Length: 186
Ligand SMILES: [Mg+2]
Image (cartoon, rainbow, N blue to C red; front, side, top):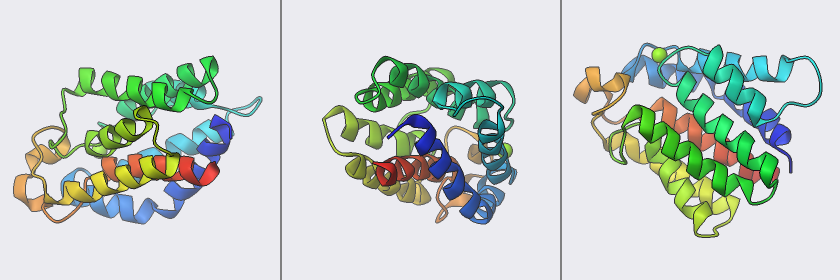
């Protein structure tokens, strides 16, 4: 499967989950996460020209998508785009790993800080050890669910403290949807 197929499927899943992503971010952030992710992906699909891959998604999310997480998703997409261009098969693991590293460099978030890293890191670990996309998707979904029990130390939700307990981090849920789209595309 190609990056653009995964992006199309991801955009559809995010559109379906928009209300839920918005609700989650209203608890732990400023409520714009669903809007930002959905409109960013719509912009990627609407770019004129050929089918668009993660390189285009990276550029659009880095340059045009707001919120705390827009640029972080931009880093992940850019690294995926770069790695998939080098190797359309093995690039998923290498790109996701490089994306995680870039996000952690910029955001200084570790596993357990209640950020999208809590979904991305376990998915990367699965891919790097040679796990399937389904296993990576399951790991990301479990990681995202687990953020419900974490108190934020980084990111927007760190301002609301305990109020977000019981509710998963929207960025982590957004990452889990990406790996689900990857698993369903393969
Ligand atoms: Mg926001």
